[in-house]
Length: 233
Image 1 (cartoon, rainbow, N blue to C red):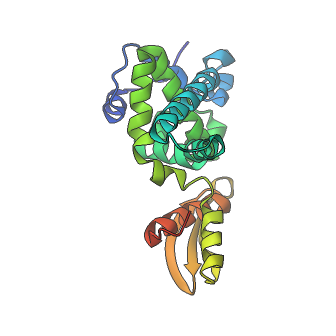
Image 2 (cartoon, one colour):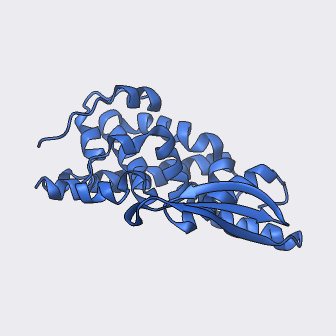
């Protein structure tokens, strides 16, 4: 199996785990489009690794929430877990860690902005977690999840449905809410949308995304953070 030469030194420093076998990372960063383009068997793309990482993430998150909130009912625990492991939350962490720079993509996916696509970055969080588990076991995997996801449960969980949360707040406070498309940039196959939240006539957060929906969700999240209102739940 032939890969481009990736130096994972900086990445391992960022995530706080040194791989004994970096081939696990090669697989974790290989998109199916690249394996197809290079005629590599599909089992060497990140899909199987992501499958493993998804299961480990659900277990580790469930275990931590069960311990941390002993009086929380099952339904609320399920909702909180879903909010933590949603696409927006995981893709944000992957983006901050620079996972996209290590991704092996086909030329077509590269041209259409796959390296910064939320769905792919979300997959990468889970595939890297799967790689860590294979290389270092459950303790190493738990350390990664605790450090980058579970250390800020309140901050990450608000991503789950920030737009609905902000809408509920605006209705409760009787303040009109709208999303304003500020600009579009980039070629048709890789657009970037810039959206601002306008609440009660006041412009709050502005965010960018490769879809209007993702830009709105990010802007809503940042607005909630900015408001820092205890009534928002």
